[in-house]
Amino acid sequence: MNELHKILEKLIGLTESEWKDFRIKLNRKKINAKTAIIKEGSIANNLYFIEYGLLRTYHLQDGKEINTYFACDKQFISTFSSFISQTASFETLETLEDSIVYELSYQILTELYKESRKIEKLGRILAEKNYLCVLDRMYSMQTKTAKEKYLDFIKNYDKKITQKVPQHQIASFLGIAPESLSRVRKEICIS
Image (cartoon, rainbow, N blue to C red; front, top):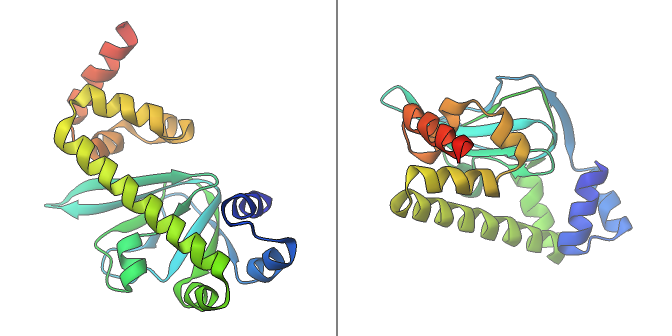
């Protein structure tokens, strides 16, 4: 929980007193690997801060998993579209390894927005980062080669993600065939 405190102190200037009020609203959970936290079709009622772990979001298209996001230690995650709109999620949020998360409910977060400009700022920062992430991903998918996509991925994503996420899930996330990712990885190793 210290890591979350440091992040909030840096991002929004949360004081010690404000932190004490905030942390009692969090629910710490240990979740086993391969657990669906939010299932496709359900409403995302919680935002998660990952103390330790590795999570992904994905959806099914014609029975095939399409990975949409990965997050690990000291990062926030949810199925954001569902969380923000409080409508059914088109994605599933799943743990890839045993994880420890802090959850904050939508209801409590919206109450905190009304009570605290700093927490409202946190919501804005998370929304902005999420938007920029989606925009960058869309641009990459439309304009970059398989090699450029993979090089961007290993440059911009946490080492834990690039090393522990199965290759077929990374290929799906990048919008390339697993065979293409294998070729790219071999090419990079040879270079």
